[in-house]
Image (cartoon, rainbow, N blue to C red; front, side):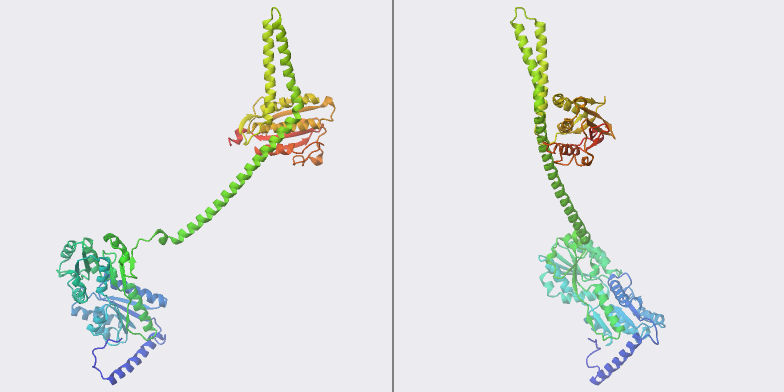
Length: 630
């Protein structure tokens, strides 16, 4: 759309001729901008800001424009900026001086494109383009079509128009506050402020009929703050701009609005994105970032020689999530598509990548832990079953040992029982006499008690051999005591076979931690095997020796016999299950012994004596080195 100076001012032929001349001029400018020769330089763009650098709206749009140009050209472009300060210095003399100054400043560096942000800049450049850059393309931005028509822009000025629809801002407030009954419109005293107030009266004429509407204008900043702080709670406050207050003091609008909103008695709305974070709930606006990038695309097309025409910058709704929470307004009542700024994002939204990685790592870790726990439980069950099997095997082994020793045990038990019977008969005879010898009878009774204790010990040892247990009974004991107990059990069988028992026991204790009955069974297995191995030996040389001591910081017991020894080729196999050299043997005694010893962290080995016979050596960790595990 081209903005003409009025219909009918040129005839059709004149318009056609002007269009042809404009097209020729455009092609020439295109070749000037895009051809490296004869100029061999980067394109030049001049951005004119209407106010000073503190006005956030135009500054934000200008920065977005710069970013777009540098991004698209790889920074191969010269961008200049000028702040006209026309709000604080609106006088015509100031504008004329600025025109002369910029004409002289850019005499040697004429811009190829001039971007006028705001209608004040557009009016300025329209009047002064001949001095500054007579051949430059002019792009005006940051105001609406109606304002463009009022300032009567030349036909060749391209517009990136932005419409700030105050009615949409008011409707947004109504959707958030459906029960509001009062409407307050705030505007300052500068020319721009008064234009905004006039626009608001026109656009909100129908809307305001639903409310008790009051326009707050021509007040000082202190009066604005006071009046806003005393509005009823069921009010809507729409803040336009305050470039000047009633005393003529200049303000940056958003700073003035911040002072007003800080103590306002009701939510405040405004038409500019820059009011967000300054106490305003929100409004309908053209974001200055999108405006700047839209203008940037127009500039790039103009430099590239592409056809350009007027466009409308996109509008949107913006809201401040913090103000919504502060006033108890619901986000769901916002118009669709509203950009909610400063929204308190969830932990997942802020840290989704790290959280996903962490959750993945935790799941992986949990999987490993689950697998390890499964494996641990599986091993625990296997170990439990293994212990039960070991206990079963030990019990069977104990029963077999008891059976093998039953004849000698019965013979050994028969001695104290016979002695008890004989002593009882002797005491009976003495008591039937005329004058019984009470001292002798007392001695006989003592002998009976000792024989009874001896028989009880023999039966107790048999009971220990035959006792069946479901769990290992961990206990700390002296290895020498267990060895002595095992020797007492086999003593009768050794006598019956004509075997002499020897013991070599150090004075110090050898504390080990294990199941006492199991260790005793190991010694019995080794002893019975040794006695079997000496069955063919000469009676005078049948000797079974038990030696206990410390070796390599472990408790050790050696069981040595004077039999025929173990064939060298079988030394490595004697602890394997079912290996035996005896005709009636099961081949389980030594394998069970090894299983027991290894269960308690020990070792068992065998070798032959040089003088004949074999030695079996069992090592168990000393209790003080092993610690108390159970």
